[in-house]
Image 1 (tube, rainbow, N blue to C red):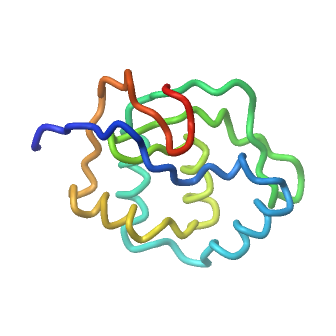
Image 2: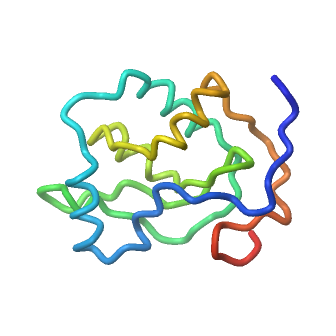
Image 3: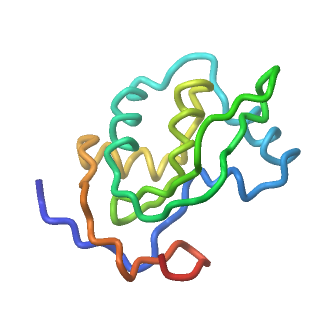
Length: 131
């Protein structure tokens, strides 16, 4: 695998908790699918293999569940180019969430092999402070 040279500002994907609940519900309903993406298991593996770059206190709940369902802490992971909350994995598994095509292409171009144990010092999220 080629050496990964992280970018200074990480692109964000899946930061649903930043949205008000009504917008999050609308977004999830408009981006959910009835069937898994053909590469869904490979995408999940990629997301699970990222480097932890931010621990976020608290727990995210599934706003689409019939009953309140805690899905975990929205800790932030990265591959050196993109950053995502851990909870996006739940939405991908549960609702086959459509991810942005440029992010899917990014994973596919790397044969769904996510670099791990990156040095995340000095990285920032789009529009955020340093991690």
